[in-house]
Length: 243
Image 1 (cartoon, rainbow, N blue to C red):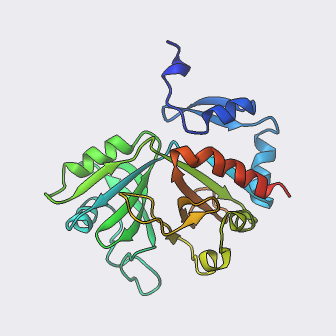
Image 2: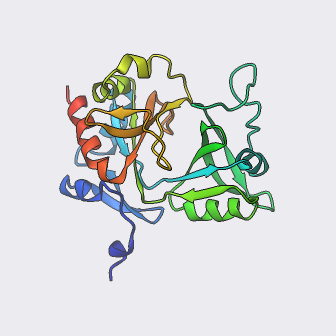
């Protein structure tokens, strides 16, 4: 078996291959580095317009139960009881915070974004291949009654980044004004975990989590969907962004 066959694949892997993407190993996944237009042009498009990133290689973990907050307070670098806004309010439903998980010796295990899905329910997004490692780390400190689930390779994640990102995203929403008007930086809407009712659905009744976050430094969103919906959402975003 070749090294390429041993690599993990995102739900968009076949799509990338058909578009002649330049593929390479990244974090244990077979990932596109750039397409035929070239890395420079793609970089400039994200600065001046809008671009898409397949970030499904990143891992999502959910933590729930009465002791979920205490566990995060013990293991996460940010104080989640005083991290929102100038008044340093607590992390509340629909808001996110950035920080790090540390090993016992003080070295960094991984950086992460923690989002509050609801009372005693959190979504944690970590880097490629880190889902099992961070999950094991959290379980080593968790008390009874806390449920930790690693959703690695079960979701699709797409980043829409650049100054025109909202113009693209709004075309996939039934009522974009009600969704986007109050989405401040590091806030999110939607819930697709643990049989929770889909509080946000894209056109076509596709449940999603839409987050006003991203790692590019540009204005944009991160979009989480079910694995089986990823290609359809990716192509819908491409079509919406074509103009």
